[in-house]
Length: 246
Image (cartoon, rainbow, N blue to C red; front, side):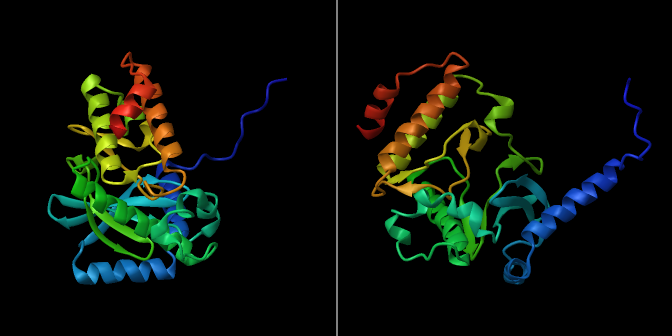
């Protein structure tokens, strides 16, 4: 027997969106975070927080306005240590954060600070990544990557346009390695495709002094070549690794 259709009224799209927005607000905007955002507004770092452009288990990213037609990206790490403790391999062993106590708010703040420091290294090394603007506690403010007020899409959605995109990605991996940095989590989901591919999500990035840096680098290269290989752009992993370290 066919199941009778439910008589319950489906929520409208507006109700659904409102529910999702309230969920985001409850997850992200606790009192300490609101106080930090208020200080940033008072300092004039941005004039308004507009809307979420990316949501995740550990952090949400919002578009913020500076003035008419100019924007920043504001990444708010959630004050929830469990998700970050599962990623302890990226923090433990990084000499920059050797004194951080695990399973505390400091653990979350460390990942935010780590992202900001890594973005600074990228900026100095001319790696295609958002330029860092400001950091405090669990919030990182950075360059907004997009056009027309909308963010660039990730490569898993738009796909590479030519072999030039692969060349750009590999050249940037080489630049960051020469600058003493490994992204440690590269995939098509954290590459934004603008005029060139841009690397995002730098909280897990490690310096080359990290005991697992070489393993993370090899994994990054493998992930990149596996993804681009699906579109016919092939390279040998060992050759690429030797060239990066060359």
